[in-house]
Length: 153
Image 1 (cartoon, helix red, strand yellow):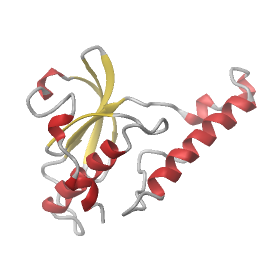
Image 2 (cartoon, helix red, strand yellow; image 1 turned 90 degrees about the vertical axis):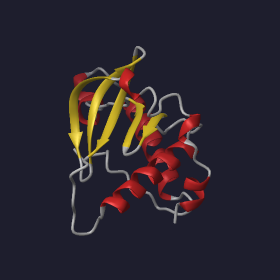
Image 3 (tube, helix red, strand yellow; image 1 turned 30 degrees about the horizontal axis):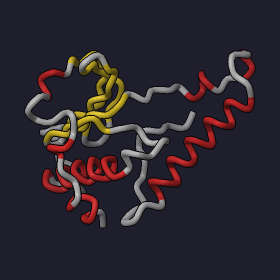
Image 4 (tube, one colour; image 1 turned 90 degrees about the horizontal axis):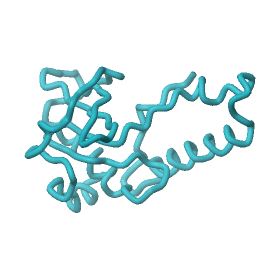
């Protein structure tokens, strides 16, 4: 139950809200999930990811109300973790649209030691940081939260 995060979440405290969502310049689609599509975008010169909710989605297990609740819960948890060094920072939220820093990394490409661009130590440090971020969201009160943005190579 994540209601304690939702109760303490006020989207008006964020830099980006429904009032200024029009300032975002969408660039390209970078992924799609069960109930949202992610786009790379620019907002005030910063690279961000915009996760836009599918308004037409109907899933046998998820009603429109539960999809909205899920989006609010995700935003509330991200807001709660805003000071975590291993979690992307949320910039804004409006209805089912969530905007956060763009944290794109192709792990398979980045961790290719044989290419000579990275050391094993650098890869181990990055792997530890990723594991720490997953530990944080899995052990959060009311969780575990499952991250659907990491894909196995």
